[in-house]
Amino acid sequence: MKRLFSHDEATGITKYWHVTGEGQFVVETVQRADAILDANKRAFNDAGERWGEKMNRVASIPLSVYYDLKRKGIADDPDRMKKWMNDLDNRAFRTRGGTL
Image (cartoon, rainbow, N blue to C red; front, side, top):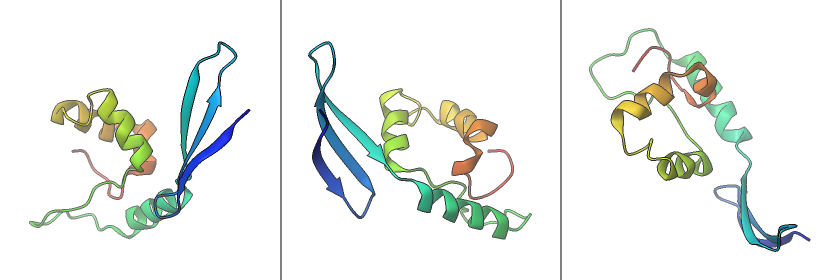
């Protein structure tokens, strides 16, 4: 049986507590990322071709995805993070085209 553990309206993160079939206690984290992904798509479509001299935001990553990248050591490794950001499977998180 799944029970609500916590919900954060600002981040859209909901945590549930439940027991697995093997008797393990689990806190499951779920995040609705629709708003972030929709905003990313709009920003991507509105971004110009030219990068310019100022800093450019190239992505917006939901917290749940970021924490997973941290857990895997990707977020703390600039080369692995660039590779992850340039991967076409992760393009929904990009707010700007091009290669990092």
